[in-house]
Amino acid sequence: MGIFDWVDERLGVKSLVRGFLDRPVPANVGWLNTLGSATLFLLLVQIATGISLALFYVPAADNAYQSVQHIDTLAFGTLVRGVHHWSASALVVLIGLHTLRVFFHAAYRYPRELTWVVGALLFLVTLGFAFTGYLLPWDQKAYWATVVGTNVAGSAPFVGDLILNLLRGGPAMTTATLTRFYGIHVWVLPASLLLLVGLHLFMVIRQGIAAPPRRNATSEEIPGETKKARYAREYAAEKSAGHPFYQSLLKDAVVAVGIILVVAVLAIAVGAPLEARADPNAVGYVPRPEWYFLDVFQMLWYVSGPAEPLIIFLAGTVGFLVFLLLPLFDRGRERHPRRRPVATLAGALVVVAVGVLTYQGATAPAPVAAGAGLTASGSLTASQKAGLHVFELEGCAACHLVNGSGGTAGPDLTHVAARLGSAEIQHQILQPRDKMPPYTDIAPADMTSLLDFLSTLK
Image (cartoon, rainbow, N blue to C red; front, side, top):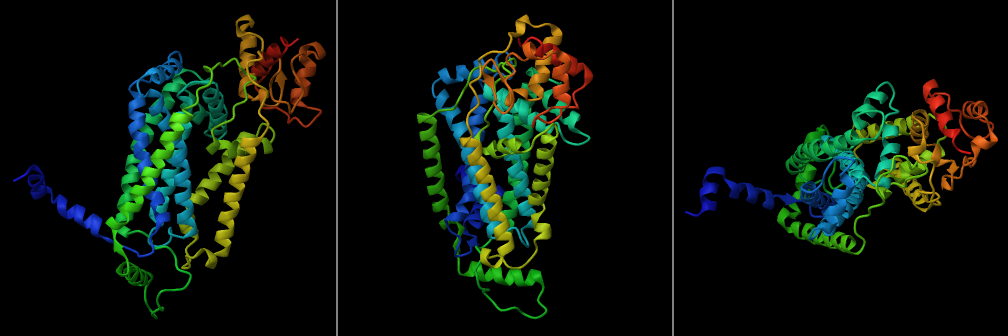
């Protein structure tokens, strides 16, 4: 008796595999249905490359950047880091397309409501991976994009300060922030991912693959028939005209090979980006996030005032709750997009809005290059350094130039102390004369420090 037969006699592996591969699927399941398996494939790629990178990465502010540089010097180091970077982008694309297919085919309706909810949570976990992994290289883009992102998260009503302290480990971005993001990225999110993926796969296998919707009903209604009985009858008819699942695996394999080839080419030809080491004093640096967060980045420019992070947070929270609970209030029977004009139009508008915001964020004029230099931190007093930190947290550099570095939406502050006294500057901050919003929520001690810092700009 061979080892496989010995194991099969005790666990019945053959019957499990045969039952999985031979199970019938609807006849019209096609290439669009490969998006789910392609997403799962990329998750496995992310796990494999992530484990490889974690073996050499040092999650400390003093060593993280150097450890990433060291990875690039190792055999296949740049390839592994590039594959991890580009497969992350591909994963966001595929999980987005998979979600859109499920939405436009109304495959979240009975009996797959919980499958959609688990999938929505997986979407959120994927974005969590993208956000927490963003900081790990500890370069300029990683640092400042995370400053903006944590400020948005910290604007949550009632629990904002708690969330900010939980993410950063304190008021500023330090090694505590990096180690927390690393822990969330390699422990908390993977554990959540494995649980949700296992649950999602169980539901898909248990309930079967949803048949693509037909414009016309495949069978006549039977008076008095329950929803469960009608669904079972119609789904059985779809499967009876279908084929075994193993025949669909060829399409899944073709798509997986195509994806990994594209990712590998990008990893070799372009590689994973790495800017200069993070500099908390480079307040003129205005980050442009990865493409999958450009829509949020662009929205920040349309919402002005100190309440803008709160507005963005609330809009994102409400939007996700609608996304998560969609099956609970969209419970109709029709599934074909043409027979659901309101839902189809709403979905299309959301896609267009995200696409337009992403395009605008990607093509917006780049901010003036960072590094033109504010007053060197070594020459500042303790109060002035604290004021520089307030300048960072409030995002002043997004609209104001200082020594040629920063945004151009507001006045140039390079020589502001030569033009205005501290009282006049404070008045302008609290009661601005132009389109600048009033920053009345700055604490008195922070305001004093901020004015001390601005007084150095002569």
